[in-house]
Length: 608
Image 1 (cartoon, one colour):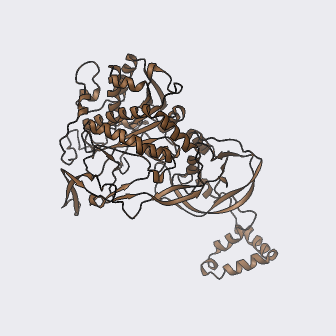
Image 2 (cartoon, helix red, strand yellow):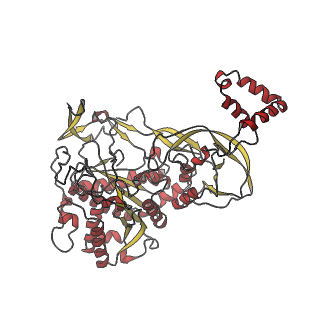
Image 3 (tube, helix red, strand yellow):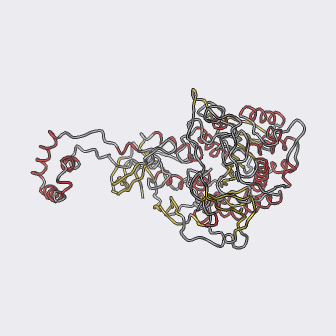
């Protein structure tokens, strides 16, 4: 989830994850579960999807949706499905840090090659946070129904391919138990948020540190999905919607044709199907004030570290699904089934339109690009003017634990007409799009990550060039690590330099993934390789001066250069400088030919 409570205690044993959540020694399986708000009653047509008898009852159905199958049981059930239908195939696309295989399931007509059969493809990913595993059990039910001959599914597969990653975070999936998801209704054995290296895979879409996400990127680059669905479970406020989802809005999109199709075509199809099945679809919900929901919600614009943010940059239609954690697991799984089936129908029906939208966005070459957005201070009151937000009633009660008033959700439906919506539509970081970047060949990790993304990297088209070099005038490191990195921000100055290019590779921006290249290589972007710390070596110096050598050199420099002497005398008027012997020596060292000219220089050069 986007704003989830992070667990802090992570135990590893010989590189393998514990099979249960970590709890104090005094606790047991009988330790009380965290009480959750009261529920609204729910019944819907999607309940007819449940199978209770026969050979093909899924493990989740067999437990009445109290539990989800473990890694071994999941794979075994999928292998049974594949053995029962030649249309279903399985492939291991990668291996986790813990040595478990990440599975890809393909469903195509007659088992044809989804890369070559010319049909549009839907990619569904479940369990990037393995405690949020609704997509896995919904997929098992849907594949089961295909094997059992469900006519509607067979008709859909005639027009579109279905790819499923049932468990992406396979290591976190193994760390299961009743004490992993305090704010969520089921399953009772939900998995863990982070992977075997305690990394949140859902923050890794740009840096690609995790083998699991590099495997997904291979799938995207090989199959070119027409639609990519990333299934999560949300948390936070209570509301009536059970299936919420979103994508990058047109006002912030680097793929405006795709954004238009998602909003104008896909959303209406998905909402209609979910509503007909008895579910309540809604937008992504992120409250602006956890103590007063009526203050409004944020229309979030995702950074490219998230699936929908990256999908927008790489022109892959991407939808982030956030099922409501306070709804029962049974209800969430059924809604996810309906969502996947409706999405598969939309991809088959709209394949040509999606293809045109993707091609149109790939041909775009804007002069500027926004790398970060801020939230507007002025709310939009029109979003829920005609149809009010379907919320829940709450009250605030003084609580002896916190000593303050706390929100208590009452389990009663309450509509919020004209609920304020604060959109992330204010440009925060906007840069000019250059013609190309030049990356030193020695930056092998960055080069590997660019290739993992599928960005085209070539040899320079000329031996020398006048390029822009950025130097950090000031910089600030984070005070603690985030996702395994000490992030850094800087202010830069520019200079033009003549550079021989034999030791560089060229990354042009007039390519289909040009917008993604800008987001990764412009250091002012919040998800750039620079800010993730891939170039931190530029902040270290390895050669230094000694006073016994530098003092006589400085005296000689003053004799030879009257302008330098004048500049030094002017600096001496600053009392802090004049009273700092080290600063006075550095003044001369930095102006001598001995000084490291690569210090604070961003290694990537820019062709404007």
